[in-house]
Length: 308
Image (cartoon, rainbow, N blue to C red):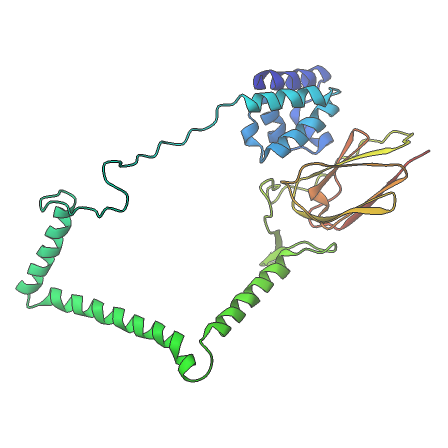
């Protein structure tokens, strides 16, 4: 069933005379994902959500009805054999809670260890007690470590400075706040890390566009001249802050992630999208795939209005 689905897509593309590269430029879907769809190798895509979103956009671009293809995909996934976990062997001969019996003296697992320890001890004796000195040194180091840890815990309590947990709690709280502040992007900028003189986007999801890929510059396909309503579909390609306003009502604001399912709304008058990472927000208007709204880390606002 999965191979038949890929054959339908490939045959439709070849009938229209498109190469995978040409389809990538027009749909903004990476050619390796398009190839995976045509090969039926859906495990190469980041998540099943991406498979459904890309499959819907690709089939619409080829002039195919996406619903039957999505049903074929779901049916094929349901028929895949599930991985079986190895059985857990439980020793029922020994009662629960019973103590383990000591192995015999000639047990093969313990013999090498006992032999090595005894040999090392004998060597120490033959060299003037060197093995015993090493053992004493290890014991002394362990005792010093225990004394240090005890002092860290109880010395502040003895001196009336608390039990030492307050400073630890403050340090943990400060670290959490720093991480939270760095991980919360704003509409004006996304999280970046300066490396030398270049700026590298921190990875935020599994469906990352490789570093160094140029920002897509392909011309958007034209929208219908008459739009009585606006059918909006958004697929998240990279982690991005996004705000969606439908007919003057803010229906979504926050962080959108590649693992989110496609967002779909219908507007009677106007659609407005704001984002802080334009390359991560791929838009389809009335079944016309417009692709990402812009470049990586680019703050972008887009507005579409009906013509009725």
